[in-house]
Length: 325
Image 1 (tube, rainbow, N blue to C red):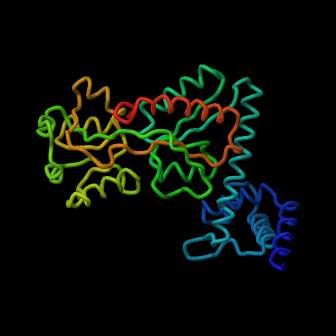
Image 2 (spheres, rainbow, N blue to C red):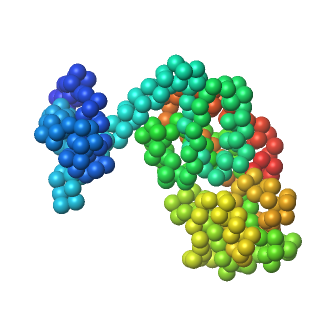
Image 3 (tube, one colour):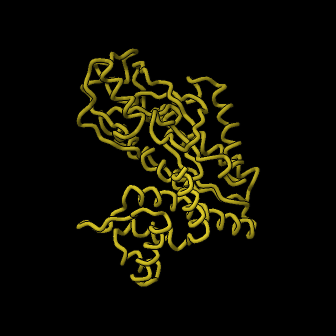
């Protein structure tokens, strides 16, 4: 009971006294590891910044930062409040942006993170549909791997992330929807020796040079597991790259192999610029989906985007895994 009363009192103090400037200061200190530099960013004096921080610590009844030889470092309490502060500030920024967009007749704004998986068909076609239905919507696309995109989703810098679903990470406080399953294939240059045989033994792949996704990605973990399950160590000297343009150039000019979503390389294969290696994979059909924080946090424009994304994904899923990805 005492703990609950303490919690209620903290909420009452914070709800009546918390200032946005305190949250901005909190985030700035975390980024600069310096109260002085954070104060300069907010254009206030260092004593004023110190007082704002002290008031915040008193209101929450915790120590938010420790002073060390590496600078001012957040405590576990500070890290938690910085995370929530970033989300609050991002939501306020998005609200201001949306109101400004509506005022100027732009019709709202959607910020989407995408992995390579979704960048070839699903995302471009969804953008096309949304622009046709809501031509004044502003759409921003940021690409990268899950380890880059998911933290941005948590802090509110992204409305959603579209692509291969992570196996077990980043799921706290997020909604994740499976949209369909994609086909991934082993790809090589058209003159590669393994491009010709009708069927290739997995053992023939073990000694090849590889281009692989970064180690922190879901696909990389699946690839490594595939090698282990087949009794081979994963490639130790692989080139790690998520840039399709770079990978395509390397595949065309070297003897490297790469595992990519079929839709991403469909056109290059049809034109004879790349070829597939005929070796079945256990990871051939992998989940593609969308991640977002909450439907309640999505703007009308983002909800429209999500609706069109689901609709198009259903059409792709109806084609079956061999055709859809």
